[in-house]
Length: 535
Image 1 (cartoon, rainbow, N blue to C red):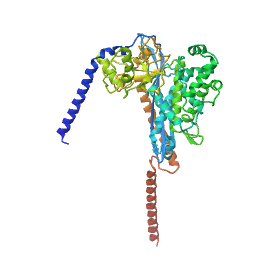
Image 2: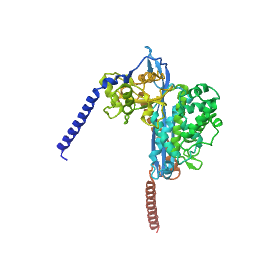
Image 3: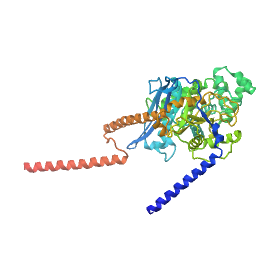
Image 4: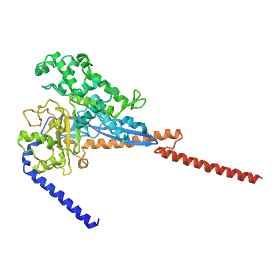
């Protein structure tokens, strides 16, 4: 194609895109003023200094002949938010906060065994490290909340979407497989009794969890739960078990005695998780992915990740740790297709809205048109709007812009509800619910962490940016260490270090054979010359 024709096509396409954007902006400006209430400025709240941790992970695959080495790790950047001279909060540099800050592993595996782990004939080795990285990130977050005094925990992933994706994959896995770590009844109850603060008014996953915990304590707030449903303790127990059986994909009817099985359930589950994580992440002997004569499959790794996320949610609620998952970009349309529909019903806003490509671009455009200056956050809404596989009234979802710089980005975030929100189509500002007190804390604590322009321009939350750089540095050091160890073992076995596939080894031995033939021929020539000289 001639150069001038290429230039004309580029100009034409660019002009088309700019006109489409201008058209969307004009459509949006027609009722943008009605959306002003969806942007909330930071309010003065009693935010005390606390410790924080940002967690990011890294993974890679290396090969030596037919041997693969899966590397995965999670690394935390920890510090404190302290008061400055004016009484505001500032982020300190990384300090010696008493928190676990890393989990990493290098797992060797024969290339031919990968299909047994992935359960795919054409299973790719690249499928395994991301699963191990996700598990290590969640396990590190759980360890930080469980053993340390961390006030705010940041993860570089969406909590609600992780729960949704893992739940769907685990349900599919359990339809045809038995977990190597947990029995059926334990898995079913854990997946269908979801941690939540306070008792709901209807029997569901959150209330089932409350009932389960009351069995464990043998007392407590039974009167509150019973009065809400008008049931006695025995009737409530039967109703909870019946609900769990109906919610179970495979059914647990007749397999357990409700009173005896519920007592101490959470403690047994936590102990089981510790044992399973010890096997996969901290295995002192044997292969980390080999258990009871079988390879630990993808589905079991995802099940562990889901149960660890559930445990993390429970611990965050118990210790009032502000747990926040941050996303840099979203290709979905949560705000437009979810919360916006409810706002249309409750606030009389037209249900139609031009789609700006992503929620982040949409909110950024609207805030600019309204002249709303950062820091601000959007109204929060129930992440259940995003998909039915996300449990209702468990995760709140919102968006935040932390810096007024023109390079600053809008981030999506989600967090647990720290009290029970309204039941139907919940969006902040809908109804008389006063909130759980954590909505404004999100902005109050995140805003001091957005003082660096470069990470913001790159689309990073600053602590997560530091955690990412720490992860990359630690990966490079670990990679040199484990590859050197493997090369040492190869050299001891008489194999060439640093080689790749089997064909490389064959080439090496062929070269060695040829060199041996040449050396033998030279020796024979030398001996012949010596014999001739002697004669």
